[in-house]
Length: 209
Image (cartoon, rainbow, N blue to C red; front, side, top):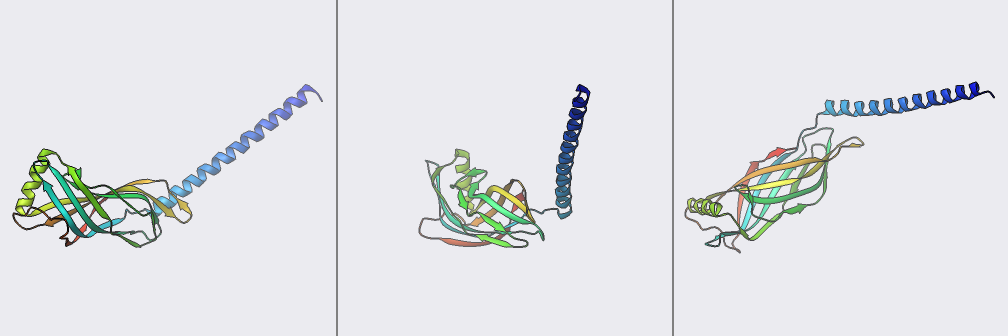
């Protein structure tokens, strides 16, 4: 075999490799475009959260130490509005906040898959024992309690994934804010441990995904 013949075979091998790589790249691009097209047609809609009720077991501000003790149980419902898309709730935490400051520990919700149009209900307990609050928040909270109404925000944070057929997306950040107006009555100093009060709220939550 001459050197010319060897060079010819090398050129054929390189051309075959180039065609093979081009076919692989085109296949990957086609699959990605197909997934994107299906995704755009289906248009996933973020879940709809409702804060149904809150049972307050304790809500006491201690002065002058400016510490807050909070014990409550909330009922949250989440509805998947999508007809062809399921939702995986991978890791989702719930906690209570007052004027943007977290006042309870985060409670982890169980991992859940939500089918098309399904509704999931959670009833987590939220605890915060003698949590220090900023002095200006202590003043604001004292005033709110005096007037009888306190706005507590129930926050839900975590990650979700979308499921379309056998395709499962990457993780998306879930951020939910549920306002809860707790009416203690005028000139009230809060609720002492052992005297729970249940509030029917039915409040729509703001959801960002």
